[in-house]
Amino acid sequence: MGAISSYRLRLQRKRWRIRAFRKRRELKSVANNTDAIEPNDILVFTTLRNERARLPYFFKYYRALGVDHFLMVDNGSDDGTREYLEAQPDVSVWSSTKSYKRSRFGVDWLNWLQRKYAHGHWALVVDVDEFFVYPFCDTRPIRALTDWLDASSIKSFGAMLLDMYPRGPIDAQPYREGQDPLEIASWFDSGNYAIRKNSTFGNLWIQGGPRARAFFSDAPARAPALNKIPLVKWDRGYTYVSSTHMLLPRGLNLVYDEWGGEKASGCLLHVKFLSTFVEKAQEELTRRQHYANSHEYRAYNKALNAQPDLWCKWSEKYINWRQLEILGLMSKGNWA
Image (cartoon, rainbow, N blue to C red; front, side, top):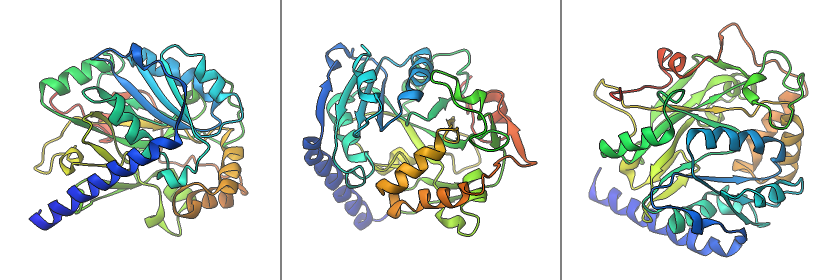
């Protein structure tokens, strides 16, 4: 990369950091338990709205992995989400009724909270419908992964977003509060993915899976991106640029090997397609707070009228992380 391009990226990083600093005024502290954060704690950062039913299992899953503290922004929930979060001793909560869209879909808010609270910590940014899977996660806590990353001088860890779905209509089986959502949405596409490199930021750009074939078959280039870099040893000088798809400085995006080897990577099991999704999609279409004038939710609503079955003959039922490694969707690299 040339000197001019590097300079432009440095200016862009400064711009996003300044923007996050300004957007801090949109956040109101509701329950600040950050005094309990220890120097080596692993932190989760999340923005959410009206996700009360999903929260019990979300916390159960990540606490079992070894997450120490959760920092969460509630964007105007009216279903009891904020009240539930306030009651959790390992959760710090901020609320905002400001525009999710104008906060760059929550990125500005979380960039600020990470700058203030995550410096020197391993920080994992996930949505409440995303479940982080990494090599040996069935036998090793997340601290085993971060300790190995520290010992290997690795600052960021990539994970492909893997859309999970049920067999049959999406709303056929009601989701119960506290239920493991993978009991319902246990299938995924083992292939059907396209990968290219973003020449500006150096990150990979991955598209495909059930959303591309079921909701964006007529415009695959507009399908949601599946590349994520959710786990980072945070420094207050870092910033996410677009969701967790890419960061600055640029070197944090190089979570893959270009020379024929394999770097360790994980997956985010994305359990969006539950019975709650139909109502959620209608709500978000009305709010118009999502990317590109909510074109993603417009595509969802259009297709949902036909009650689609996302299952196909190439669908695989999820077993464990080793299955995902065999299929080439993640890798343990040289971590043994």
